[in-house]
View (cartoon, rainbow, N blue to C red):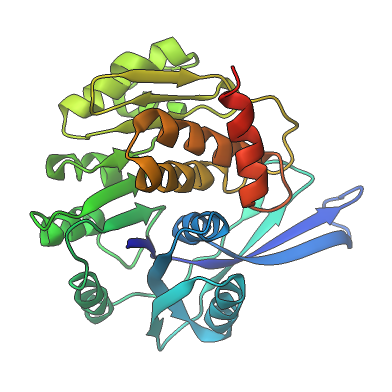
Length: 303
């Protein structure tokens, strides 16, 4: 079974505003409200691909209720922990201004809440995959990713980690099955600027030397690189398409890779599924559907 954890889920309020003006009353011309958070995005794409999974995390308040309602409407299984105080965050994303968003804070998560999550994670069995993705609330210790992997170490669980800097570096001693920095995050770790696929390769291998088994580096319009555990390095330019919505593209790449690996245990297939899912989401209004993913996958494998 595949499990995802979203520590700070959100309702993503995605709006389009024509002729936006500061200091004036602006009205939307289109709007959507979707469950958000990196782990939830991974679960959504896995569900779209027909891959069974369980979404874990924390919710609170009326917004938490709506997040759960929308996730259950998508059809995947949720096992979130209810926080009694506060409310889950609302993130405002302005579609007409790529990258412009206002993210909420989310509820305060106590040690007792974290202990409840650990109890749920104790149910994972050998062969299961655990996806930890995204930032953490300020109320949580910055060692939480490390603490979870330490707690589950030696149980034969495949860890997938999509996080930045110390959250990522602190788990490498537990040999995660997959990590997915983007090229900017990878460059920040080593204090370099990485713009081409060839430049990425030696630094992806450095993370393998530090303990990661597979390093998947997303590069937006430049495509992606995979430094695989079998010693191979796979490179792929981005498939052709028009960028519509970059939100969730990296999460979709994680989901595609995990789905591909569970299907065939083949790195090339998993890599191409990751590229296809990430690109399909970037070229769509919503997270990628199965049909959109396989359309791109088929084009990659006709070459």
